Length: 431
Image (cartoon, rainbow, N blue to C red):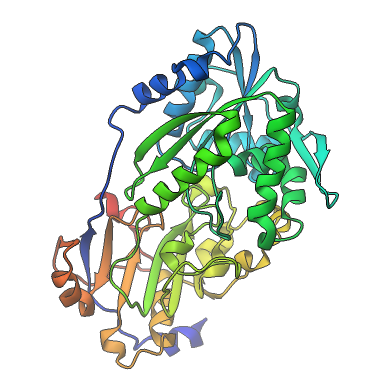
């Protein structure tokens, strides 16, 4: 890579300043109490009978307070005399293996010890019906054999399609609890029909299986719980649509536009199903979503440990690093890709040997009229964008914006001897 370094050696990087984006942020102060209050409503408690074996579906999304919400839900089911157990409800994630899915839950803080109940992970499924076009409707075997089913998930915009129901309880019922085979069936026609098929498959399962209720959360722009709702099974589809609208109103965004370059420190499944939220990057992996403006060049530097090498989303970046490439687990990544059928998500752009070279390559190729005044934004990930870094050339815009507070003066980048940043993914937490 000597020639590459020579080509980029004279590319200067702009000084960057830390700023805070201010968003309206409703928040549930006592999450445990809110979960208890919701589940103790009469229309929820009357569904749970003593002695019932209840499968509780928990997914791979890094929803805020997931371990606490799961623990309290299990606790409440036990209080009502039930015998709950967890089933991973994450489709093909975790490499489409039972052990891999338990590892994903553990990385989110959900274990048998934290939850207070067994985790029954398996990839076997049972067919419970077929749609008019012949698609099989499949359910996890452990959930099928239970006396009741409960699902827990956050409700938010999906990363690859738009519709009345996107990412949330309905999708978990259809895809999450379908394991790899069920997820495969739901994706067979691509995301062009996902809005339709996810609901149709959920209707079949809700009608034929003993779903009791769902625990849905809505988060604010700072990844905190803004609302918790326990929803009776027969109301999930319609109620989720109202909660999705609320979730979209709460969504964060990058306030300073346009951008020449967007640097994303880390992609990860805990941040977005697609690794990077398209509503932040402006890059969607399918034509069925228009997420808004994007930078001329998007760079992603790393993948989180919690993703276990699943690097879905790297294809939405123009440039990445050797570090991320070396961490890719092709089994985990491709199991997800082959199930979703969205190959664009795993395409690999330019691979640079260091963070410095990746960022310099973005500057050199961004086609800005004045490379000395590139408009660059750096974020830790696409979920946490309260505090971001902006280039010196954007400071005047930042000062004028009513919802931006400047937290420090522009400072130069700091790389180690190998050209990498020491603070990838953590600088926004003051680390």
